[in-house]
Image 1 (cartoon, rainbow, N blue to C red):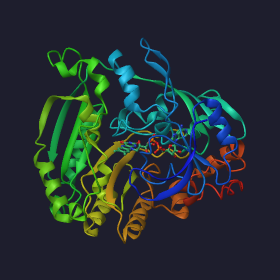
Image 2: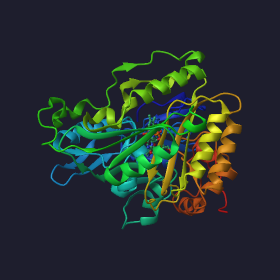
Image 3: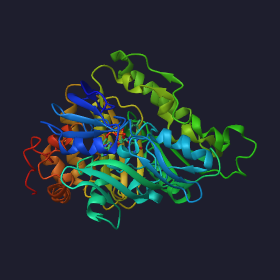
Image 4: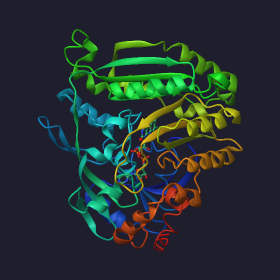
Length: 464
Ligand SMILES: Cc1cc2nc3c(=O)[nH]c(=O)nc-3n(C[C@H](O)[C@H](O)[C@H](O)COP(=O)(O)OP(=O)(O)OC[C@H]3O[C@@H](n4cnc5c(N)ncnc54)[C@H](O)[C@@H]3O)c2cc1C
């Protein structure tokens, strides 16, 4: 067992912070021993800590880092089936498989997440409208549980536990290893279309059109534009280019895949508060909009297409010492009115948010806590300042009225009552937990805040 230490940890948003005993497990047996006997305060798994809020924190308890356990255990370069330890990051996995012509089937906007963390959040990418979330591509898991030992689960073996783990935020057990089906790619190039739209109607019709034609799509919205410009933004869509389409571009050769995820520059220290002042953000958003004129069939490198923010290391320091919170919600269906209400409330709040991100989701996964459901999903970053919780409550009401919910992997602000309204299937997760963790040893600050656990070791809350 590697040395343990007490540490103050945060998520990517640097809000909130929590002190915990950190264990670095060096074998699957150590993972099992830790979830069985975590000590007072319980334990939560942690990957790269790229969830924004408190999902991978456990104030006063223990945190289990999986980063020592990151081997590729099995990779079939013919079929694209890969089995890895859960602590491998997507950047490390990509470096291993991309030179053989394989890429993750679903990837979030950063490659610095672990496979375990991505499974626990059931992450989505720019292709959810076509390929669903990560859950669709995971074929088997090995899960260390407090009550059942380490168990294998899949869509056929212990299916309820399998599905609850995909999106279960680490509350069904510690994922030790996982098998995933990769996607075949022929080059490191993306054939990309960009469409600039002057208002929300134009943006949404461009997004629908992009979804019909392309595997990947995302829209960036100027979160400060108001009135007739409300919702102005840029839709960026694309597909993997074939070897023929990218022939002659040296950077597009698959062998260059090992470089993905490397930072070119890094933010050295907390930004001063003027960096987030409204005029600065307005200027940035305006420049971004102008820099993306409508274009068709451009060949662009894969890394900046999927991971534009990974070029800058520690960009979370740009929000200053107090940190920031990301508010990501899903608004089911194709009705633009709820989206317009949320955007309007945000622009009127006077809280400067850099570019907001809008995507469309397709069909949901089976997991009771999985976030995506068919509709629009909007992400907004807010610096942590007085009044933010009140704004979030107002946005929550708009989201609940629309039948939507907030993404737990980004959240730092939901309360227990609002959580139950947004996640009516939470009782299914509690039923699974009653079987795998009746004493409530798996415990995170997020789970405590939204009422999914009581104090560690004192059993589970009654399902409602
Ligand atoms: C710049 C940026 C862009 C992002 N873009 C997207 C996006 O497009 N789509 C999207 O879906 N998400 C996105 N995210 C969120 C991110 O994908 C998730 O929060 C993911 O869970 C982070 O993985 P991690 O390894 O850092 O996990 P952590 O943050 O360390 O943990 C997240 C959760 O996973 C659990 N967990 C971690 N490892 C294990 C394990 N081995 N076993 C069981 N549970 C475990 C933790 O307990 C916690 O509940 C983004 C985050 C950032 C910073």
